Image 1 (cartoon, rainbow, N blue to C red):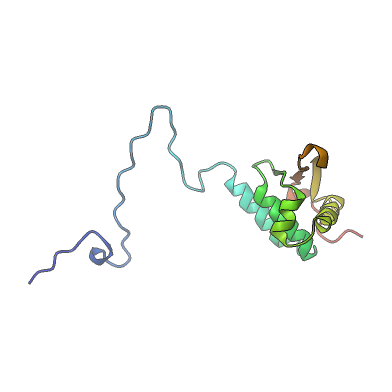
Image 2: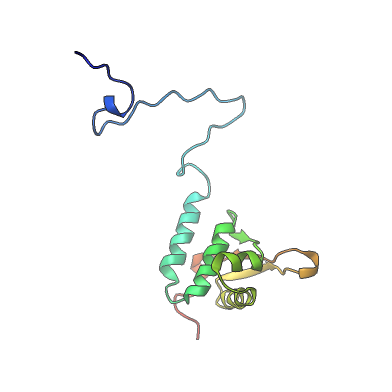
Length: 141
């Protein structure tokens, strides 16, 4: 009795990747999407995240956590504008604590204020994460 092998994992030898189906024809004027290495800005985001984790070990955990939340909302230029309430919900603390931690990050030179938020206008503040070369390597005195 012969068993017929299917194209699934049963018929595949260990260590040999499955055959790739041909890529669909792209639309006129449309550039096919590339992997993570080919996308612009992803390498910079990984290096920024690594710098937050590696170079800011001197920073208290609360401030570093607020910075990581800002990083999650940042665009390719490092600008982020989540409201303090959103950051507080993500971090798990009160809004006034987030405000104090943002002041610390600005004072230490890790963040800069691009635009101040205003409660009456319902617009959140906008911050820019500075490049790691501008960060202090140890706690400011």
